[in-house]
Image 1 (tube, rainbow, N blue to C red):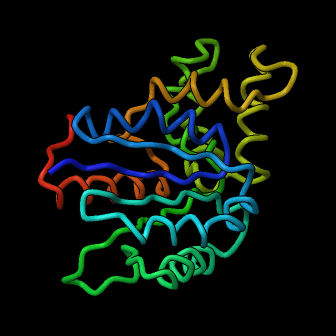
Image 2 (image 1 turned 45 degrees about the vertical axis):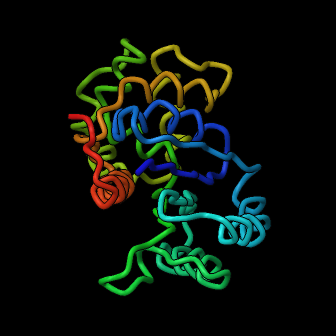
Length: 213
């Protein structure tokens, strides 16, 4: 049975990152397509109709993954909102299913922003930007990537600019590509990334695929 994943994401930088990260998790046997929206409000505006369209034709070979940033909102409420939209059109989400029931939609929340995933893999940042010290991860502010204060993209911009990178402002799409190609999904310290990673592994396992080491 072939397996295809449809990703709905807030912005292009997330698409850039996922396009490089997903093959490391799923290998070549699982196909995927990433649809980037123009921010969270655009995604939420179009989501009901998009999911209704999926519901009319998808089968067990398709799964939908919706990725949005927490952006200092209540994580549980945000996840519930996504679940409600999916359930309303007749789709079953991972968190709303009965234990014996398969699911069609996975709603991991990116805490707080995409850049938290990058801080979850300091080695990848250092490989992309060699002037950055590998001791960065030992500093108290960066030990918990999902709890970095003041905004994670601002923190990444400050770290990179301190070593002469992205002096004109953080180019989020370029940074996403440059860092993601070096990321190791297994060892990423971001809890929100691991929620996505484990969710994808479960989808693959339920579909009788093996994932790459």
